[in-house]
Image 1 (cartoon, helix red, strand yellow):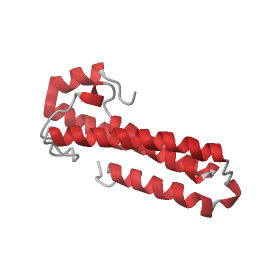
Image 2 (cartoon, one colour):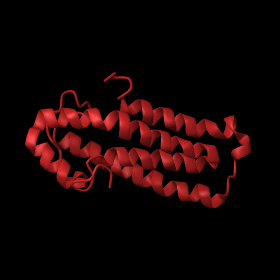
Image 3 (tube, helix red, strand yellow):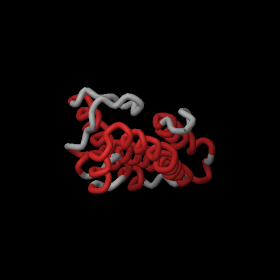
Image 4 (cartoon, one colour):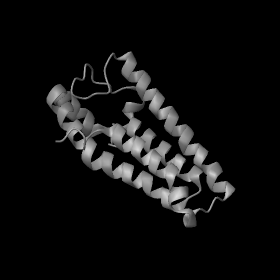
Length: 148
């Protein structure tokens, strides 16, 4: 698969930029109720926590984020509950940013992020994991859900 299409940071950063630009691109959709903005802090904070915890686990295992060369199979910590908890964290972060903008159109950003990651990034990553770690990964895949 084309490396650009299955490049997760592309979806992460582009959807954040989209959400941040929506108030200027679609000002008619600005609702800005204070409660919506306050609620946006929660997924933002949880997303940061999940991203950071995954990063720590990868560093502890001396492996990389780049799946072409995985050095270790990380399946402990938060990975016991979600095979892709870092993507879940990124989805929550993008959702929090979208809520904080107070713009209804910005809510398309998390939907686009989810679609890109779930259908274009995760399947090739799962193939690499299966090829690299074999039955151990398949057992893990069968016992831990993709998202939550």
